[in-house]
Length: 162
Image (tube, rainbow, N blue to C red; front, side, top):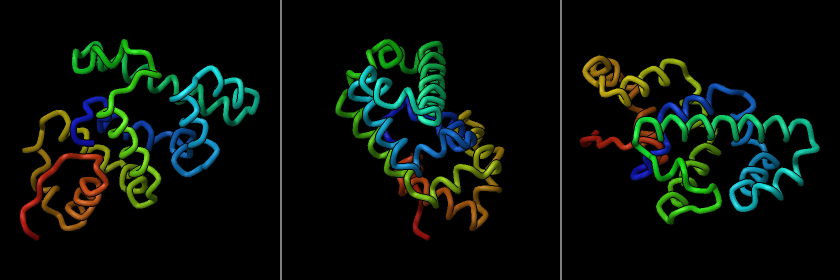
């Protein structure tokens, strides 16, 4: 998501690689729990904490986000976001979260993010190793998938005319 430094390819890949977290973007109950968690974490845990499947999901999601923001804080990329309470969200962060949530409800986008080859390619791009994947990125199927992720707002890439 453009402008959202905390929504990284690593985070998206971790969500896509974990069946429990991946389910959050296809299961309406998990989506409701995530929404509740963002507005009132205590109430969300009271409401969903007794349901084993939801409790497992919430714990996995909170663990992932905690680890993710800790790593960003250590890198200095999102120090303020890592220490800000979860309920406080800037307009830019909310917009980025909403765009990511919408994109990850799209089965095509989720399928692309689940592909190990695409995860590796996105990881190398994120690490600034674009020369290593230049030839692979020219493949029509890869270009189509990258365009789809860009259209969904998950990556910032500029494409010339087709």
